[in-house]
Image 1 (cartoon, rainbow over the protein chains, first blue to last red):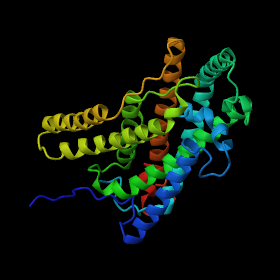
Image 2 (image 1 turned 60 degrees about the horizontal axis):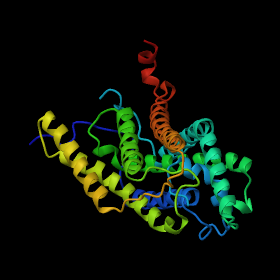
Image 3 (image 1 turned 135 degrees about the vertical axis):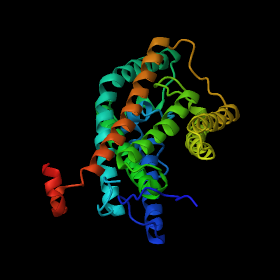
Length: 67
Length: 256
């Protein structure tokens, strides 16, 4: 039977349930941040269009549909 | 193997910090590029937008309210690319943590660069060809929700295509068959996505073609720069942890 993993990568921690939950929380936070930068129209940030307008040029140049 | 042998694993927190930092650096670099290459195009497009608004005699477009002035918007560009870069860096570090053991390479640098490259392909290039970015004055505000959903859909399809490419390659043993399977798997998913999603064609006939082209080029450059710099910076920060100081037994090796 061939060895599945000839490589022994040691740069990452072992995958545990705790790690997965932490990763889930981090991914949610990162997606929320992305949403505020790239997609918010005031509904989530409660800032009206302020955040949208402030980061307006970034949206266009990062390729996100803007208006 | 000697690269990873005997080196302690980094915790998720340490990897995450490196990802966020790499993302912030990459985002600010991309912001500099966008400022130099993209802002003049945005200015030109806004001038056209305002000229059109005056010609129509229509008021109350949200740009006329000047909620945020143009100078502040140019500062906001760096805020946007910096935060966006940091968020992407956090996602890259998380993907690296969860997928490192599944990437069949002994090199951490290659693993980090492959993931960043996969993201560049899936979330930048695949969406770019289907829904190329538009400057201000292009796009019908009434369709923004539908266009945003389509954009997110093609982004997910881009990532699925990259995943399908890897899965297809791993069904084959010979290297040339792996390459063909990878390309085929990728193209099939992308083609299905491109055919199923609606086409957007909202560029006004009067909008200057060269300005549109130059804006889209600047946008492509910004995004490619962001992901390239993110991959390189993350790989560098990962490898920089291997300081001989924490490995007393290796000092002679490092000196030699």
